[in-house]
View 1 (spheres, rainbow, N blue to C red):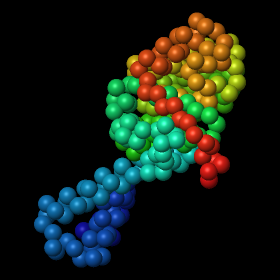
View 2 (view 1 turned 180 degrees about the vertical axis):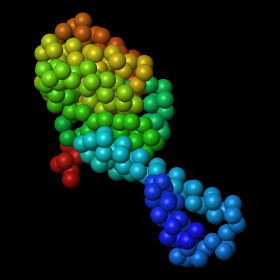
View 3 (view 1 turned 45 degrees about the vertical axis):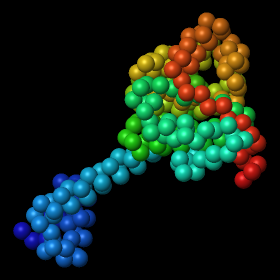
View 4 (view 1 turned 120 degrees about the vertical axis):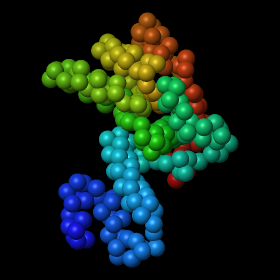
Length: 241
């Protein structure tokens, strides 16, 4: 079988990584310096890397992060109250395996959304399905989904995510439907999946935003008891930039 026929069949089988590796080996004439085992290992590894890269791209695209942030971009200064060693442990994503949560609080501009996006990006790199949601927009979307009959499907989609990032909680007081929807989301994920929540408000102010003590207790009990807490401080990062 000729080189062109081999490449055609590899493409038809959607083995694009193998096809590129095969072309490179033929172009550089490396095959003569490799054993059969080394040649097969090299081609299979190329296909594996290609599929992993495509999977990562799909996960990041599906997550719809607010920022394309990475761990390397995080600023660890004393005034931010961000402990580097503790944060890098979170970057290892063990909390996802343990189904634990992360709560990030701090004033506007201190980098809450950026840090949450970096954690989400790291989760994608490790193969976890992740989605970023602005809380206000999500709750508005769920109201629309109720009216068109697709609410259950959207709730199930959120439940399936290994990591759900709920950004900017507490910017507006919740109405009755908002409270129930948020409780359902948190209840569905409790003990099964991990959630990251960011808020300008300290935890002791969350009851006021939820505006129903019973539902607030239920939400906080499911979020906080197994959560890592990051309380950011310092000046606005936007002003520094």
